[in-house]
Image (cartoon, rainbow, N blue to C red; front, side, top):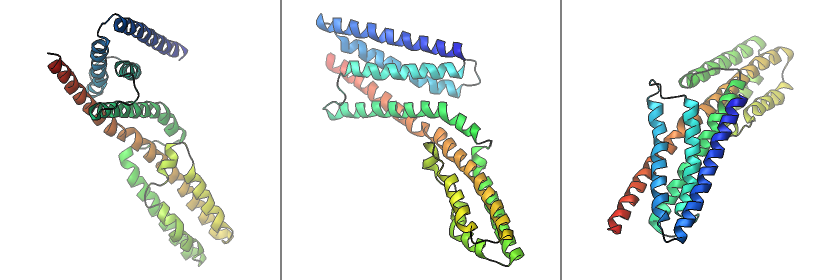
Length: 271
């Protein structure tokens, strides 16, 4: 692990060195009446296509084209290099023209979604492991339906056995809503535990009004609630890991189209 981190650090140092040399060369070219915008433009266009190749690599996972971790590192390096090149090519954070603003918005959108994707791919798998549960994303709705069915059967059993409907009334006022679908996704995305706190609060609220026999049913109901929180965590995190590409890839494609059109215009008007 330490050797891998050292290798990654070397790559980042090399990238910084390349960018420093490129910056000095561009400043010198500008001072000597050169055309630094052409150099940065072509480099940026090439880096964009290199980054887009990662998506091709994912679709060709059956072909041995190197480790996925290496391609992720390469994509991260290229993304940082691309935004740095963009600021060299257009040395302002936000341009004035509408056309240039559209390109800038796409650049920042692709960068932001790329950073989000990198973070969640590094953080979320470990958090999923911490739940102690392994579940396929497509099976989560079925698992939630199973828990809801068990909970409803338990509440009916409690009412029949004890002759009291206190737990049943509390269930249909609170837990029925909770077991209907995944809840508190926003909290789980940012590391919160609102679901666990909500279940504990319901246990504490109604527990004082129940007999010892009813409390046993409440404890079992609460266990089902905690089981559902683990499913909710998986639903929230796996949804984010699956859906961020639905934003990142279209933005990247739109950026490539705009960059290609920009390159064509530059050559047309340069003639």
